[in-house]
Amino acid sequence: MSPASNPLWIFGYGSLVWRPAFAHAERHAGYVRGFQRRFWQGSTDHRGVPGAPGRVVTLLPSTRNERCWGTVYRVAPGHEPEVLASLDHREKGGYERRRVEVVHGAGRIADVLVYLATPTNPEWLGEAPLEQVAAQILTSVGPSGANVEYLLRLHDALAEMGGDDGHVSALAELVRAQLPRG
Image 1 (tube, rainbow, N blue to C red):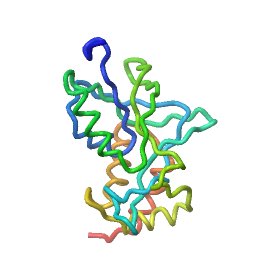
Image 2 (cartoon, one colour):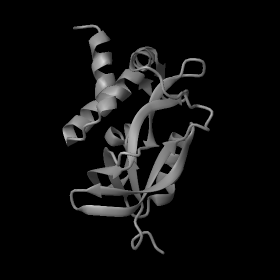
Image 3 (cartoon, rainbow, N blue to C red):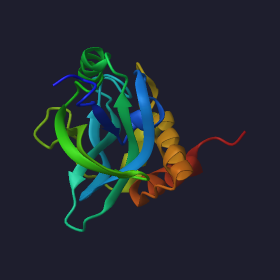
């Protein structure tokens, strides 16, 4: 099947929400059902370094049929191979490709690619008290910048689209309260 008849759609729920960095023909706020976003994945290649990992998000199955908001992109036709190669490199730190259905303002897209990390990957940090996660985010910096930027830009992008996420909001509040005023 040619790319024109079978477009490649990507769902972003972390930095892809605010920094896709790939050619796309369409972009929509949308959500997946049955998942929750958590800062349980370690990042030693983007928002932290080996020995001092940052914390980034992954999707975890939810039994409560929650909505996890993000951004769905239709990759620009003809750019599919380069976009997949770029995303495979960007998400190499423990993420796997999966397929999900995304709901957005114009309807549903049944076959959307998403990258998610599972507890079996070597970068997995897992659950921790929010105060501990916030403290780690406050001190972590990697080649892609400060972990604080990742959290706050994600929080602001979700707020702008009306995509409430209690976990992200609680962490953003804790982190903002500890940032220097000025």
